[in-house]
Amino acid sequence: MTMLKFSPENAKTKKLRTIAELQKYLGKVGRKQRKIYSLDLLAGYTCPGAKECLSKVVILDGKRKIKDGPDCKFRCYAASGEVRLPAVYNLHKHNTDLLKPLRSERKMVDLIEKSMPEDAGILRWHSSGGFFNRTYFDAVATVARNHTDKLFYAYLKNLPVLLNHQMIDPSHGVFMDNFMLTASRGGRYDHMIKPLKLREVVVVNYDYEATMDIDDNDSHAATMGGSFNLLVHGSQPAGSDAAKAVAAQRR
Image (cartoon, rainbow, N blue to C red; front, top):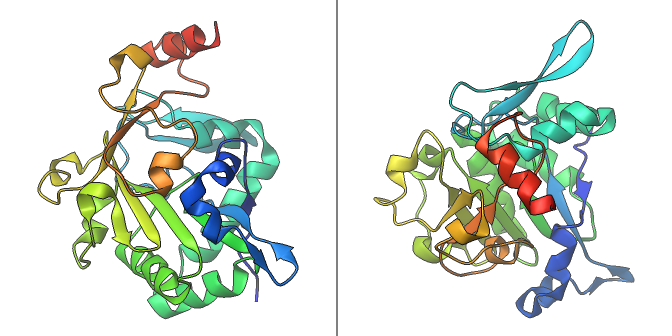
């Protein structure tokens, strides 16, 4: 059985190790220290709810090029990584090619659980990509129920996948006790955020535009709490407001 490939912690997610309330998920299992991982898929191709951040990598003349969606205001950070780094693109494509053709929740759960690293303590769905259909989201929810010793968290634009589920505390991001969920504004289903009373994240270009706490280390996303902001980051379309903002941040 070909397995999914989980990505190790990056510079951002490794900061979760400093959050006191998350320590219980990062203790030792046997002699191994538990770690932080993410399961990543192809950006854009697995994001049916994306709108303002929609970008994807296309292959033209054998080369990877980035293609922004018609309503793109800020380019997906993950898509920028895929176009620059062949290994990143290949990993995301590998996982997408394994998961997306599956049609049953049981098969998805089986693949995820057999592939999940034994030392996983905290797992983000997804640093790239998203919940491409309801069956996949249902499978992820089942995995969380089966592994209450681990913490799972995610951002979500494909909000219709929630309609068969009852969240514990949507306004504070608690889908399950061990699964934190944040609606990501700027998508096709923004109109569902308020009726579902969901915690949300809003991307801003500059810190002075923020009306809520800015999450720069995933601590808001991975823990119980209210809505928050993110600063735009990564490579952006030339001349765009987002590109100007990123340049200003660097200065």
